[in-house]
Every structure is written in structure tokens, then in C-alpha cells.
Amino acid sequence: MIQAPEHSDRPNPESAYRPPAPKPQARPLKPLALLRTLKRNPLECWATPHFEQPIVAGGLPIGHVLLVHEPGAIRRVLLDNAANYRKDRLQRRVLSAGLNDGLLSAEGEQWRLQRRVLAPMFARRTVMDFTPAMMAAAEALIDRWSALGDCATIDAAAEMAMVTLDVVERTIFSDGFGSDAEAIRMAMATYFNTIGKISPLDILGVPDFVPRLSRFRVRSTLNFFESEVDRVISNRRRILAEQPRQAPNDLLTHLLGALDTDSGESLTEAEVRSNILTFIAAGHETTANTLSWALFLLSQSREWRERVEAEVDRELTGSADAGIADRLTETRAVIEETVRLYPPISAISRVALDDDALNGEAVRPGSLIVISPYVLHRHRRLWDRPDVFDPGRFLGNASATVDRFAYLPFGAGPRKCIGSAFALQEATLMLAVIVKNFNFQMRPGHAVWPSLRVTLRPANGLPMIIGKRSPGERSSNDVSHHELAARCMMDS
Ligand code: HEM
Image (cartoon, rainbow, N blue to C red; front, top):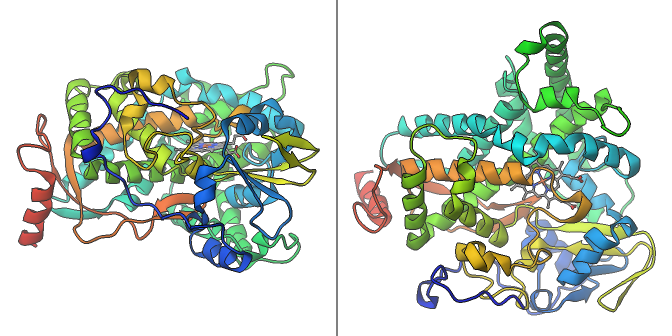
């Protein structure tokens, strides 16, 4: 059990805030109820034993399944014996629909080569160089919100999807999507809404050749994407060939110039295209959801709201340097705690190739191993007051007590998220800029509920009332956030 040390960063139990989450089922659901609940909201399937026991066997009608939430066993699956466990068909289909040549779904030698070639693009130094692009997207958001005037109601979830797409655009293709930008954005929305739907045929293990309606829709959207991305790539290749000094310093330029240091090989045309789509698919909605949940959690916690306000007033002055995100330690702790409580990717799954044993449980060839970061992060044996919002867990001495394999928002081992530093930096900066410039409060009467559709998002959006904040204003004095909401409701 992780015993978080008592220190002044921990909330007092009286004021501890427990954000909304489904109450675990008393016992694992029977197959029919399980299928129904999986279709409605997979998050509601989990039962008390999953949050209390290291490993629970069974559950789905698709063969031998182990639900694994014990750090030693997880380490074995994802790191020590990772060669025995490959990504399973369902996860690959859902997370990377259609992007077969990209890093997320590649396997074997193709994956190894791509990972080596792509790793430098997501190294700390390169990611820090994206600070100006991320700050520019944040400033554009502030301008847009400022134009709405006081007491505007926004859907924070939709706004975060827009701003993270803006970051994608500024960091991957810094010269923009071009004339069809709006059509691309709309296609992206259709794509994400469609890949979110898991067909019951998938859960029942019905073979791939049996058609699923949702895949036709994804395919036509992907065709559009692919042709648009090809157009952007060929423009960039021309610039790189004719005026290399004029080429923007963004991920696309890195991607087209990247070579494997061992073999001297570069990525094929199909791999370049698939990886661009993979970066958009894997990085856009995950970070948007992180930010949505962080805004919601801060709107509910006066203590942490004030701590972040004090930090951003101190640190965000003048133009931001590349190291600014590293100094925003409290803001970053809020993001880390957000992805503990609401991990955007809520299940990591693998199929065993050969016999193995996990914590004394036999693993057979074909066994499906499911690790849910959502369950792991709220496991009774692993966390102190697991359902309480407490960013102090990630500050100072307390953070050293977090077991590496009990906290998996970005996975672990060789297939750990390549974009984790990028995402943490982006979310930290964005949250800091928003808190610095705006008061925000949930619209009274709106019930917030987590819903799992590929990523973990707030069901029915996040309607928030926003108002301009002056530097130095604190939630506890000046206009409190509840007062803001009340005043705005009276005005409207
Ligand atoms: C808060 C944001 C993010 C979260 C929570 C997240 C989560 C994850 C997780 C859990 C995995 C591992 C899946 C597994 O082991 O089966 C993963 C892999 C991956 N992520 Fe992320 N991710 C985020 C942002 C990003 C960003 C910004 C990018 C790229 C721009 C990205 C690109 C990828 C790729 C390419 C992989 C596959 C890596 C490989 O298999 O080698 N992710 N992500």
C-alpha cells in the first residue's frame, strides 16, 4: 500500500473533495448485463473486487481474461516480459482505426524502427521548443473568450477540443492546414465520434471479415484525411527541396527529415502519413479531456484553485521562456492528479503469446490481459483515500512514494506514450493561462458524469460560466466563483 506521508500539502479530511464517479457494482456483472453496460458506459462495469484484489479472472465471453491491477504483475506484462505480450486486436482497432502503419498499432521490426526514428521528436528539448506554439494557441483562446464578455456560458469540453486541435495544427503543420482547414476540423470531429463506438461484434470476438457499420463511416473520413495530409506533405517536400531554410521548425519537418541512426533508413510515405494522423488521433482528444477534467476539478476546489492562481500570478509574467512549464509545479500537480482520477485512456490490453504466470495466476497463450488505469488509480490497496482529489500526492516528498507501476496514465515499458512530455507540457501551460485570465464556474444544475468512449470524457459536455479575472484576484476574496455564477444567473 502506498502510504502518502502526512505533510502540509495534504487536504484536511473535512474539506476533501470526491469528484463524481460510478459506484462500483457489488460483484462482477454476468455476461448479458456486462454487454449492455459496456455498450452504455464501460466505466460502470467495474465491481468492488476489481478495486480490492490484485487480479480478477474472467468476465467477457471471449476466452481467458485476466484483469490485472498489481504493480509487480503489471511490470511483468509491460516491461520485464513485454515480448510475450502484444497489443490486442480490439484495442488496436479502437485506438488506431485505420492507421495501421503508425506507431500506435505497428508491431515487431516496423514498430522498433519507427520508435527509434520518432523518439528524438518527442524528447524533452524538442518539446520545450514547442512552448511558443503552445502559448500562442493559449493566447488565441484567451482572445476568443475575452470577446464573449462577462457571464458568457461556454462548453469547456468543446473549447478544450478546439484549443488542443489548434496546438496540433501549430506544432505539426505550423503553416496551417491550408484552405480546407474547416473541412478538416469537421472530418476530425466525425472521425473521433465514430471510432468511439465499440461494436458488440468486437466484444463477442466476431471475426474482422464480418462488416461493422461504423467502420464504413471511419473509412470514408480517413480517405478524406489521407488525401488532405498527402497534399500538405507534398507542399512541404517541395519547400524542403527548394528552400530548406524557409521550412518551418515543426513536427512535419522533423518527420520528413528523420533517419534511423542505426540503419540510416527513413520512414516510408505511408508511415509518414499514418504517423501524422496517429499524432492527431492519439494526442488531440486525450489532452482535451485532461484539460476539461482539470477545469472541472479546479472549479470544485477552492484550495487548489487559489494555489494555482498564486503560482500563475507569480510565474506567468512577461513572455514565457522554454522552461516555464517546469516552474509551474502546482499547476502540473493538478494535471497529474486529474489524469489519476480521470485517465483519458482507461484500458491497456495485451494478448499473451506464450505461457506465463502473474502473481500466481496462470497465463495461457491467447489470454487477454486488461489493465485499467482508472481502476488501478483508485485501487484500495495502492492509494491513500483513492477517490479524493489531492494534487499534493504529486508534490515534494509525496511524489517519491508513488509506485511507477501503480500510476499509468501514459502506460509503461517500451510502448509507453511517446507524447507524454508533450501532453503534460501542453496541459500545464494551457491550464495556467486559463486560470491566470479567467474565473470559471460550472453552470448551476448541470450534473457532471464521466463517460468512456475511447477516451474518458464528461458526458453531455461541461457548461461553464466565465468572467475576466484580474491578476491577484483570489477565489476566497474579491468575487467568489459561486457569486460569479449567481450574479450571472440573475443578469440573464
Ligand atoms: C494526456 C494525453 C495523453 C494520454 C493520457 C496518452 C496515453 C497513452 C497511453 C496509455 C499509451 C499506451 C497504450 C498502450 O500501452 O497500449 C499511449 C501511447 C501512445 N501515445 Fe499517448 N497519450 C497522450 C498524449 C499523446 C500525444 C500528445 C501524442 C503525440 C503527439 C501521443 C502519441 C502516442 C503514441 C504514438 C503512442 C504509441 C506508442 C508506441 O506504441 O510506441 N499521445 N498514449
